[in-house]
Structure formats: structure tokens, C-alpha cells
Image (tube, rainbow, N blue to C red):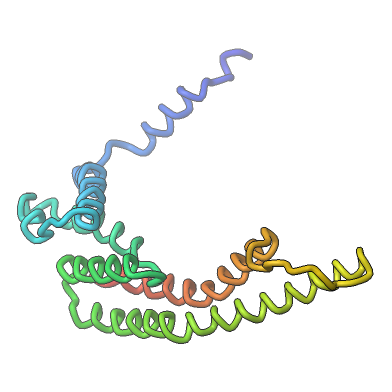
Length: 197
């Protein structure tokens, strides 16, 4: 009976044997995609010339380097919530121009990204400001009502609504909800970017 029980190691070894030996292409991918990811991170965090750094790799592995770097760059395209995020998005998009071959398809997606970024920066911020003021008024009314129920009056009570932890928590939730519509579009565009050769 004990002969039938196999260790996890034995099972894993059997599965590995069934899969067979890794192909040379798989080995190159395993080695150089992570290298490309490191290059993508380096490009975003340091002032390096991506073209020069790519030239340091042999021609037969550049596609894997590109794949890893592209993945990092695409993942780092985010909503332009501040100047730093806007600069990062521009740098990321510049890097992808170097890595992608189909410049027309890339520019097509970039125009969609620019539209969403501009809308977010203009109307999105206005929506947030309006939502903030509305929430503030509603929260103040609720607080006044709660005070009135507890004390019978609201006279003499001045509460800074914005400093209340419950208000801050609700505001974070509202912000996330407002950003979600943009994030969904952004995720669609990132998938389009991934598909471009």
C-alpha cells in the first residue's frame, strides 16, 4: 500500500518528465524577459537611453528584452493624478515608441490615451470637486442631525466635517468610484498596446 503513495517531489518530477525538455526558445524567454523587465524599470527610474541599452543585446534575444520592457512600461501607464504621473506617462509612451514596430497603430492608441488623460485632468477634476462639495454638505447635514438627536439642539456646535475619519473614508470611496470609469478604459487601451507588434 505504501508503494502507491508518492511524495510531492516524485509527482512533480513525473510531471516535469512528461512535459519534456525546455526548448532553446523557452530558455531564452525565461532568461531575457526578466532582463527586459529590469531594463524597463531602469528606463522609468533613471535617465538612460533605451535605444543604446537595447543595442547591447544580441539580435536573437532582443524580442525577449522588448517583451519584458514593454510589459513594465504598459503596466506603468496610469491616470495623470499629478505632475509626476503625467511625466511618467509621457516617458512610458516615449519608451514604447522605441520598442513597438507598428507606429501607426501605436499612435492610434496614444490618441485615445491622450483623450482620456485630458478628460480626466479637466472634467474629471471638476467632477471630483463637485462630488466633494456635495459629500461635504450631505455629511454635515447628517452630523447636524445626529447632534440634534443626541443633545436636542445644534447651537454651539461647530464641526470640521473634512477632518472626520468617516468623511475621509467616504471621500476615498467616492474618488475610487469616480476613477473606476477611467481605469476601465485605460485597461482596455493597455490591452490594445500589448497587442501591437
